[in-house]
Image 1 (tube, rainbow, N blue to C red):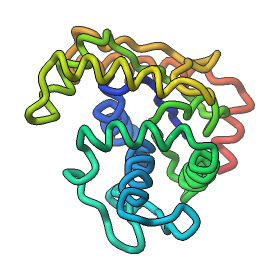
Image 2 (tube, rainbow, N blue to C red; image 1 turned 180 degrees about the vertical axis):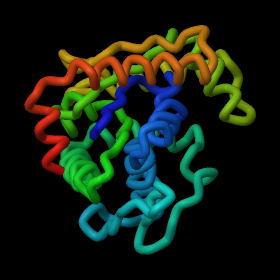
Image 3 (tube, rainbow, N blue to C red; image 1 turned 30 degrees about the vertical axis):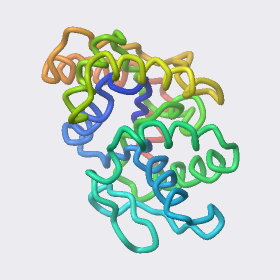
Image 4 (spheres, rainbow, N blue to C red; image 1 turned 60 degrees about the vertical axis):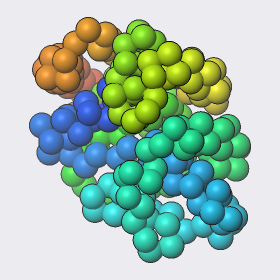
Length: 216
């Protein structure tokens, strides 16, 4: 089974993705970390052609055999830089290919989250969720995650990032995606609602999808 989760920064995709992966016994892939790793590597002087990038068993980006710590990737500077490099066609082509290969790895299925998973990376995913929230809610969440950042700063930066993140099939719900608004909801409430939505979507799957699952 493959579950695609898309949506803007701060909407709660990562927390939800991890919870759904645990609930359904699937691997979790946070594709945003891959773009952050590319931005980090380019900043360090790597060229895209020489960059060796993968994910370890814990889902951490690995550059040239070295896992990158979360604290080094989740900074306000890389919030901006990763969004900028994601607009480069050569970066997108390479990472889309990598993400698809990660989704094919093993036979246990995957929960993959990002900006264009349901529209570009895995358009045939079994369940597609588009997770969103009001900009003010997302800014409050990010301000708690980014020490020293004010609500006003994060609101401004998130709105700017939303504009940069559009295009290439990003931040657009797939035609068959289920929209989940997390505004005013606790992580636990969001997970409970998402589990219900996924289970309902699986019950309503077409026979062709069920046949594909049996054949794996």
